[in-house]
Image (cartoon, rainbow, N blue to C red):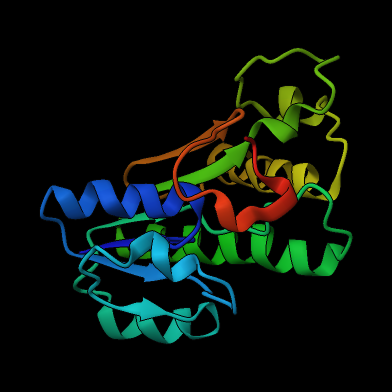
Length: 189
């Protein structure tokens, strides 16, 4: 089974759709809220829909079933001002998922962001060494939180701590398309 965090959101729901179309068993960790995000996954078969507050219980209960984790879940609004909310979702949750995947030897792909580069003054080099990452200057709390996790990962790797058996962080640039409607003023198109 594949776990997709943020699986009812824009990128996550498209990933869930592709995995579902390939016959994969998919569980989603996300919050549906009061809008119509549920429509993003309505036509796909879902193994479980897990509230993020219940993720630890789900991981404990289903640890032997999980073959891969796509961590797409985040507070993605670049205009969000509640830095504690952003840190809980984009840094602390990401660290917990990383550690769980490392401990249980489950591959992980996680969403980083082009927002980590800031205004681009430091360039757009995808170097994952600690010095290069330290030079980046995000313009908002969202970008900073994604960079904070990238830097944490770089340190974990450099210090020889346990890592998932295979992992990648993806820095998304200006992604747009179907299932983006729920983002209101944060939509790309």
